Length: 107
Length: 114
Image (tube, rainbow over all chains, first blue to last red; front, side, top):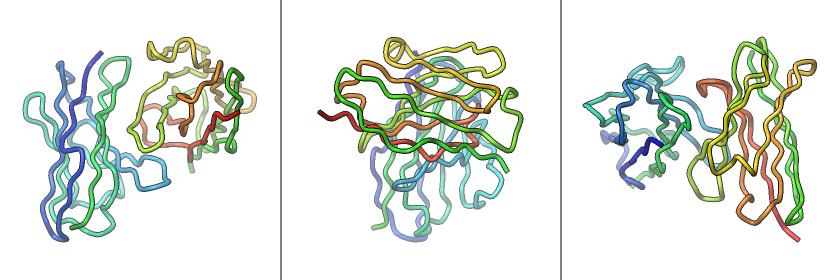
């Protein structure tokens, strides 16, 4: 199975900060990487697909990037509504595997 | 508008089974696979498996092969997951999610309690 190592597990940042969350894949997954945002008590929401593609309706302060086997979700200027858990998912191979999640809070 | 409407919360006794539904609307049900995902309290997301509603074919993560059974009824555009031999480890929220995860159900909380 492909392991997705996500870091950090939690992150506290100030409004307006640039925030980056990373997932490292244990095998080549190409660009088959999706980022989800999940607010408390809600279903996950797809934010980024294909590693770099912004889902329709997602604010442009969110972006995805890849460097080798490292995949990053960046929020360019943190807003209060961004407080949530973030999850990465690889979908190149079954079983699909998620990262362990990142809890993002406001400092 | 695509919607995935899941059934209500379930309480199951240890050793029993529960069956959760996910009714799809707003698209052709047989055009997309349906994934199922588990989220234990305060934990991350785990992929359980998928079903292709058109053919009924399925695939499961290894740890769920004896735990979960995925089915689909094309006459009612509904996907199902049955969880058997319930233990406390099965207490979690279960989501259905279409294909690449751009649409999710609201989740069903399953509580295993005697």
